[in-house]
Image (cartoon, rainbow over all chains, first blue to last red; front, side, top):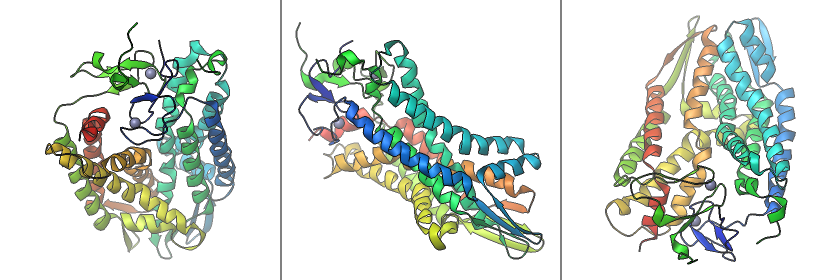
Length: 203
Length: 205
Ligand SMILES: [Zn+2]
Ligand SMILES: [Zn+2]
């Protein structure tokens, strides 16, 4: 199978149009043309570390502050999941746990794995790597669900002295972490998956 | 070996494999021979569908912002919230920027996308040349796609409803149903969207 790079060309990752290798901008859709180059991985790692840094306070600080007649209560992400379990809402507990813990953590691992695997002769695993990348790209934005839950609860549950819910600082850290990892995944060029070390010097 | 002209080639955005556009049929979907990524989904006369659906989605979104979204009541107290108020839940103190971000993710960016699609496709559907900056506008619509999170917001609403379940009773307002309809309209619109066809149509002067 011949690639655009083998043919001395560069393909537009936005619209698929092909241009001579030195072209800077796609003449059809106007997107910047990116060569298949490991230099782009620096951006992937930069966003990745930034996302990871914000994921830590997202777990340490409270996501929600609930005040009821019985007193005040603060819940972290994990605390919220545990509370749902004690109320026997197992399904929703699972949804929140998957969206806020399983997806973010596996996303960090998956992006790091994909970025580290670039350059190894992984031709046999390329299809699986691409599949993993597509899953990461598709599923990453769904982590934002917990931020929306906090927003809805805080806006709605304002019943004076009976019960009121306020957002905690973890909501902002978590939203930032999700956005930064989305940027990390978007900066990863899936065309690198198909590149072995033998080809990195060009045709 | 004869080299095909460069403007008849397509490079797969996921694996860089080169394909000959002419070999990819007019009415069938064309997938990359190497990695299977969908390269072309031609749908004849789909522009009008996309315009109609984007317009509907925009109206629904405007309704969803201003009508009551959810109403809660417990022990004689009650409180109603619009989608706008939901976004403003973070508006006091240090979390204020998050309010703006949430408002953009669930309302602003979806509306910008619908508007951008209508702007791009309206002249094309009427067999006129594209309006100025149509390329940039359509590219914006494409780039914003992962950041428009209306459908994730509705899932979030479901989770929130269960969490409140024990505390109080919640009734769903018209904006909730408008939002649900919006998700369906948006999904239909995406099914009719054929990027390759649109890029080709914009390019024809
Ligand atoms: Zn292009
Ligand atoms: Zn491909």
